[in-house]
Length: 77
Image (cartoon, rainbow, N blue to C red):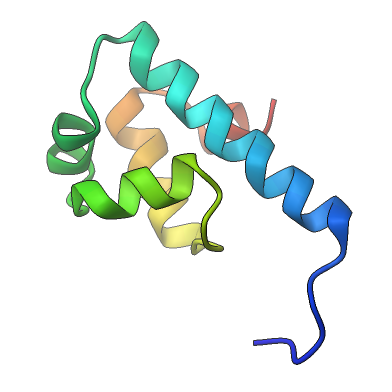
């Protein structure tokens, strides 16, 4: 974990990814709880990722992308 605050551009990217996950989830009419179940993650983890409250791992993003039926790159578009 960096000792310095993260640059704003990193936080902006985190927010974009979180918004994209939320948009894809809502398009599929999934609750955070259901997406968490499909991805094997806790609902709170989905909530935190969508709100960009914390950085997440590539593993979590891979699980979420699979649960949403998209390639991981779609989370960054």
